[in-house]
Amino acid sequence: AQSVSQHNHHVILSEAASLELGCNYSYGGTVNLFWYVQYPGQHLQLLLKYFSGDPLVKGIKGFEAEFIKSKFSFNLRKPSVQWSDTAEYFCAVLAGSGNTGKLIFGQGTTLQVKP
Amino acid sequence: NAGVTQTPKFRVLKTGQSMTLLCAQDMNHEYMYWYRQDPGMGLRLIHYSVGEGTTAKGEVPDGYNVSRLKKQNFLLGLESAAPSQTSVYFCASSYRAAGPYEQYFGPGTRLTVT
Image (tube, rainbow over all chains, first blue to last red; front, side, top):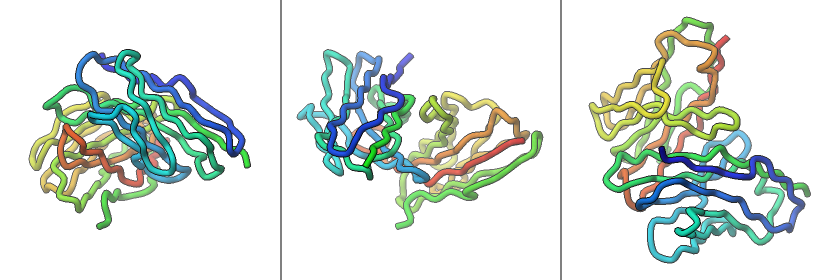
């Protein structure tokens, strides 16, 4: 079965520190990849997505992610985090073509940024 | 555009009671989804719909039913609530299933079953 694994469940950083959140998926075919963010008390919002082309994807608020097909990974990065980045981050995979758009989510990573 | 809206925002039920959660979208999206979010488990798909009048089971459909009588609405029903259904429920919609089309999420409904 397809699955998504986020290795870091809870990350605590100080402001200005660099961030990298791991995401690995298990699916050998065509994948579309997403990172969503959920700020406290809010709904999920899209940070960035990868469908094809340049494997380095830039999203909103200075976030980026790199798709490495050989490693089945799509890690999220930000060079310098801010207190306002405190949130829960979800990696998701849309697996296969011509499917029904079923996203498979990772367990989520809670990021706490200390001022 | 309001995007995706959900009603109600909070609800407390007793075991065995029934309720319906309403999701509405004003983006003319074909595809709609219901997820539940539980700590440490991410989001899991309950049911989904690929168009008006059609529904299908997701990963965790037991204990839930859905209906999509109108394109813009997707209802999630609990016929006999159980404490295991205590969760936060999110509705989402997308224009297409595949391709560069993301899912847009509603604000969520926090349900507690006692």
